Structure formats: C-alpha cells, structure tokens
Amino acid sequence: MSEGASGPPASGKCMISNDRSSTYGSRPYGASKPPVNEDTLKSDKIQIERKTFVIALKENARGRFLRITEDVGGRRDTIIIPAPGLEDFKKVLDDMVRVSSETPPKA
Image (spheres, rainbow, N blue to C red):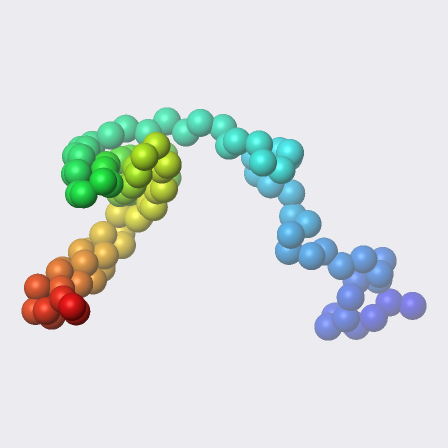
C-alpha cells in the first residue's frame, strides 16, 4: 500500500539530501578537487608584522572573485569573496577601519 503525495515514496526509501550524486563523480574523502583554470587579473602582497597577505583578483569559468591568503610562518589560510559581494565587503571593511581609528586602544 503506498502513501499519499505528502508521505514517503511507495518503495519505502527516502532520499536524504546528502545522498545525491556529485556532478564531479565520486571522490574518496580527503581527495583533492580537480584543478580549475584561473586567470589572475591583479595581485598584491602586504606584510603586516609577522603576517604576509596576498590579495588576488581572479577569474575562472564560474566568475570573478577575490582571494585573500594569510601566510604565517608557512601556515596558510585563505578566504574567497565572490565579485558580486566585493562592494558590501568594502563597506564593512571601511566601517571597521573608521571605528578602529576613532576608538582609542585599551591599555
């Protein structure tokens, strides 16, 4: 006996969202992703105290993005900001710079 449209399928099996197959095929856990061709439109490096920041505007088949990489003693962390969010990111960053310059440091 099958249930109505709001119940589970007649087979009794439900697909969990994690069960969907990947468009990239199956990869073992921890395996690296296939490389994506990226063009660097502009790149700059900033040294602040013992940290080095590399800021690169890049483009690939999915669009433009800003990659910010922090290197501290060989350990790297990266964030990626899609180009459509750069104006919002800049507004928030500008506000943080303003508050930092207006607020005296605590002793």
